[in-house]
Amino acid sequence: MFSAVVSIFTGLSYAELSSMFPKAGAEYEYTLKAFGKRIAFIIGWLIILSGIVGSATVALGFAGYFNALSAFPVFSAALLLIIALSLVIFYGIKESAWLAIIFTIIESAGLIIVIFTGVPYFGSVDYFAMPRGMPGIFEAAALIFFAYIGFEGIVKLSEETKEPEKTIPRGLLLAIFISTVLYITVAVSAVSVAGWEKLSLSDAPLADIVFIALGGDAFVFLSVIALFATANTVLLMMLSSSRIIYGMAQAFSLPGVLARVHPERRTPWVAILAVAAFTMLFVASGSISLVAGVTNFMLFVTFIVINGALILLRYREPALQRPFRVPVNIGKLPILPLAGIVSCAFMLLQLRLEVIVIGTVLTAAGAALSLVEMRQ
Image: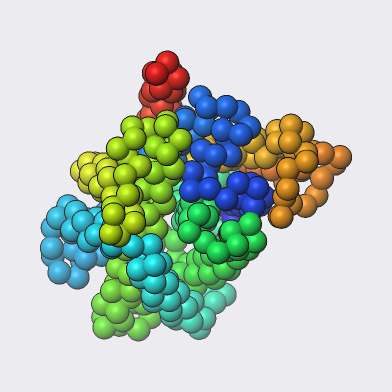
């Protein structure tokens, strides 16, 4: 629930900014307007990395489920998924969108099955038990935030959306609301069936829940649905990463070759190829918790800056048209983006020290590259 609240604060900021600047560069465009080219480059760098590292994380999750079903090697399964989805993204945005819709329907059906599976077990455990106290709750919230990643990817499709000033904010808020309802009910159902002790040791927790309640055939069924769910997440992350690379290349912050569009498919094929190649490299790490934590670090930093950009633009550009406006203000000061900054900073500090160190190094690398880019 805490992760959902943090997502809502930042999602509202994205909604207002996307209504002001409906561009494929998204976060890069927002920070460019508010803070200038250097900070914009660093944020673009972090968004690209978070998308690539996040794609690798979920690809490993896909491979874990695939391995449980077929004993197919994890690394090979992850690589094949990345290649297949890259081809879909290259083929076209409409085809990618339709595939994402189909996968989302299948994924939602699986979550609903898990929810109803747990209904007979509701009330069987203490839902407010905190074996590690509040510090454990906040640490878990910082890691679980990874489940909410994706809502910000919607804004990167602004240039390919009809009436983006209205459609994108509406889609953002609806996505966060639906995700929150599903995740909370799934979590309650899961803990009711298996208990947190068993779930913490499972490589396929949702499939295990259905196995406990319904038997072996249900385990296979839910594992197949999990394949669609994880593939869908990788598809959307790789799609949004390729679009922001394309947007930054168009703005001359990345090599111009990355802005090349295929003459027939009209997709940024070089950017798509780059995302696929680097995602494969991060898959080699093999640790889901580590790469998920690093992804969260980069997104928390980005969200702090995005919320700050909205606040600054309220003062610097008050006359700019805002088809959507974040509610709850004291004068020009929007309160919810301020809460977004504080909550994201708090969540960032709950991450493991190893994750914070790696994230800081990657951020510093982006800052160094921005100095090189500014001199050119």
